[in-house]
Length: 462
Ligand code: 5AD
Ligand code: SF4
Image 1 (cartoon, helix red, strand yellow):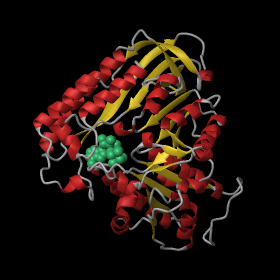
Image 2 (cartoon, protein in one colour; image 1 turned 180 degrees about the vertical axis):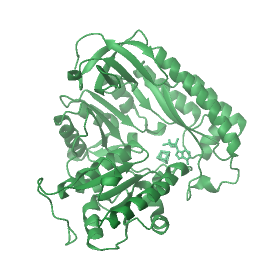
Image 3 (cartoon, rainbow, N blue to C red; image 1 turned 45 degrees about the vertical axis):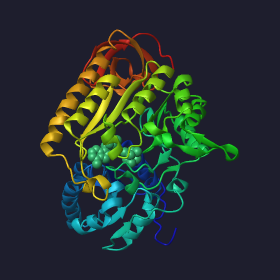
């Protein structure tokens, strides 16, 4: 680092505070945690609110218009806080990170004068240096959205485990698929897989700090192809098998996947690795081959059905989740009905569904036959009613079963803990607090729309 370096602080020095607000996907949650790790050695301790912070970072999402617009409205609030702070003689540095930073850096600078620093998702390892530079100058406005040749992971400190028993671990980033509605290939850049040794070391470190469950993250996580030992290349299935050897790591999950990258090795991992949870988020987006082709998804509805069949053959109790888009340009009623048919046939335990949102710079945004807002809203209502019904049915079918629940934290009521079932459902269980971090068999007594209630049905199993 240059003279812009801020001095590393001894723990007893007066702490500065950093407030990070995270929007969007789990990848951003992971990145925000790493930004906190980066700033901690320089005396920046986490703040609960922007109000008390010397450094405010908005880690933003650009996936849909609504997500991006939230940032500008938040910046309005931050501007007032910053001005109030300045009146009391102190300085607040405001940074915008994440995908909006990458896609609209210059626009942020011109629309929001309170922003000191714009930093893209591939350059945030330079945060301490750039914050230092901003602090040195009264009115520095720094825009750093390059895609560095060396991956940022080479420059990040060891991950500190989050509070709790579950953690995210980014193993893959970026995307080369270029679905025609999606900004990710532009904001996150080309696909990159972290080397196996680096992933295993980070996982080992998390487990040492008490983490029992790791969710492997990637925009397209099952495209993972990391460098393994002796010049080998490991896919996601091999990586999962490698992680399953870590003593103490009780559960493994991964998200988010593309149907085209589900291979035999991954299906084999679902069959053979008990730590790999029987829950898979596998976006399909549409049930119409015509729409899927326009979306450049490179798979058909029938491909999806076949993949699900093979996965369920390997792991009969596999629960599925997906993403769906309604009102993609050119989608007609018949196409939408095919989406409903596919959903009805697969039966999802959970799903996310969205109205198509045109994203600047993506091919679909300039397609001529945009669907009206009314039709999108109507289709979304119908689809979500079906999905809600499926989720309720899935949850109700759990009543009377004994499910292993990894207890994560206190529940809303006294004497209650909340954890997750293998199928990612929240489960509330009456249990003593020393069972946090343990997997307990729980008899499921009741099911709500999105959570279950159970009672302890035996001693902890792990
Ligand atoms: N409009 C609506 N939904 C989108 N998604 C991605 N881009 C768009 C868009 N332009 C959805 C997809 C993806 C999820 C993360 O967000 O369903 O899988
Ligand atoms: Fe976006 Fe996922 Fe398609 Fe990549 S595979 S372009 S991240 S929707």
